[in-house]
Length: 261
Picture 1 (cartoon, rainbow, N blue to C red):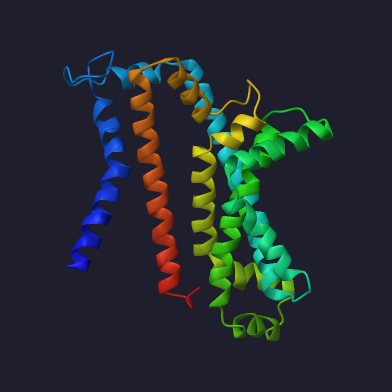
Picture 2 (cartoon, one colour):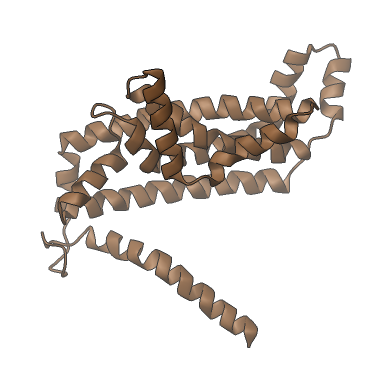
């Protein structure tokens, strides 16, 4: 009886979370301009979306920011995970806590803090500040994924490479990095997805020229009902689900084969 109740409660919560998204996707094909009642099937909103130059520019901005964020997050997260794994020092636990803090901190606090920091330092808002803001909350996900992979690594892999004459850097590049590749890829995909969908931190760190697609969508939604928002949001949902599923698949493979390079 308790199990049935928990199952029903879980299904109700999932329906509450995902039913509005399903309705949004369905209504992206609605012919009604007011988009409050179904009046037929159409692809017109997707065609208008493809011809909207401000939205295309915002999509390009989002892609540039997401790619830069992913690259920097992978480098910082992988390097940080290796440093914390390889070396033991008194402040390691404190650093680990500070790194994880952006993962749980409310985004509005992070955005306001970054805005105050940039204003105090006299840094002009733009692509650079947006990328810095996105890297701040994205690289911890890469670091956590790589750390999980490192915990299952056999130390003999690196030792064998060193015994065979490899330098520490060569052993890291040819042995450790290939072993970490699934975790790095999973963390990178997560960083890309988080950056692509980010709104609040971007709102506080972007200027007009560096406005991303979520900011444009937010601006359109404030004006009123626009069927193009449904079409654009449906594409967002599709892309986000694809990246998250691919990331989860890579992480499952890494967990299932912890010792395979």
